Image 1: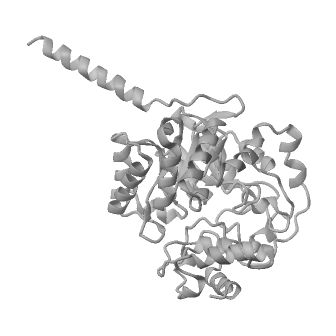
Image 2: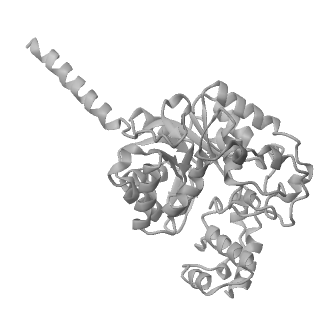
Image 3: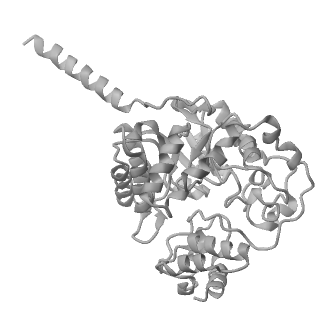
Length: 414
């Protein structure tokens, strides 16, 4: 009888060792990639990471090529916010048997309603959405469990003591997420959550244009830039400093302004064109930033983003470009960044996709045959819009969606 406690202890130790080995990351750092420690998590991540935005319009074979090439070239960090089953399945297939090489931040509170994804704090939906993510990725855990989109202070205040927040904590206790994070576009909200002590990672919209916007104002409303700050908004400075001092990592979205706007002088609110290398250098100059998340839709484009690691100091120098006098922003209320936060549409319109197609048509000055065919394949078209305005209430960038749908219906003919 005296042997049983010892046997039980040995079995427990063996199980613990086995579990640790299963969870151990097998990724080997690539000498051509710069790596940083992801805050207090201790995880080492490449400074150029992969977003999920490019996986909705590609097939599984392209997904496998993309993920394989990214991993082979040092990209070992990825964000998955989209609940679209196709996106998740593509990523899962892309990862294949290399799941342990990729550090994943997956979102809790992003739900697929059958037509589009929506933000939710309903625990039943959160559970189904999260379990679906695990299943489609063929994994039993997510490295960083991101509380999905907290852009208003009432968003954060409303979950205090809630089942939603308890569910997130339970996932960590169960080992289904290893660390807790949050995504936000609002510096005041992000700072409040950082100070709560709950999160180790914040996914935040950061670039040289947004940094010059007074906190609380919409960075894609052109009138905002009529009074552009000469330097970084003080609240953003406090956020970056606090995260650096308390070892909270920031992973960056909207690095290029959403839709690569900062790379085009005519579209950029800064009225000067920056390069990818300059934009990446700007955000990575902040000690709290660990990784820049890039939207890439095929393996051939990976090198465009990874060039940052080979770029010279001159190529990365953004100071000269940012010192140029900034003209007033171009007219128009707000610009779509294709983030899909406007979803769900009550009639099922894929608003982000329609906006993207409209921008392509306007940029080309015509609707070519390929674009017309792509638009025709959409399940619902701009002309189906019932002008309810629910999308505009959810849009973080004040895009005049209803007017955009009218314009798209006119440009495409329906």
